[in-house]
Length: 189
Image 1 (cartoon, one colour):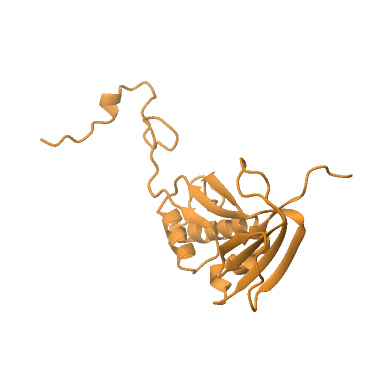
Image 2 (cartoon, helix red, strand yellow):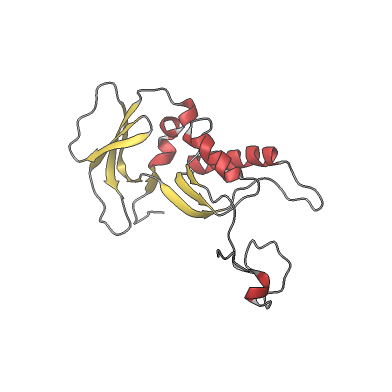
């Protein structure tokens, strides 16, 4: 079957050893030849283009970039390259839910760490978490930022926010309760 659209290849998949902070040697440089490069949905494809990645970060994009000394070269000149995807609405997988029991926050964090590593391998380079128990998302964001674990950049939410009787609201009040009976803001005098 012949495909009329160019193949999209997430550069993050190819760069996993470079992006993976925990396994990354210092001073690594990758030179990538792209057939075409997609930077945004609204901009036209650019190509042929080269990308230089230094220590896991894109440091240069251009059409006539010289190959840096000692760089590893990756030829993707037959492909359309996407530097990575951002998922702006995720919930962290922290294990199966069994009625009447729950895993510790530590075990949930370890399970969620496996999920964020999988996201990075799948080409996701940034995520926005919409809420977890026990600040698991904050711990994972800190661990990724300091290089302890591999994962995409994580924008954690900390505590979830919800309207009265909305998604993630743990109160058992009916949706028809008057707002002033449900929530009274603190007033300073």
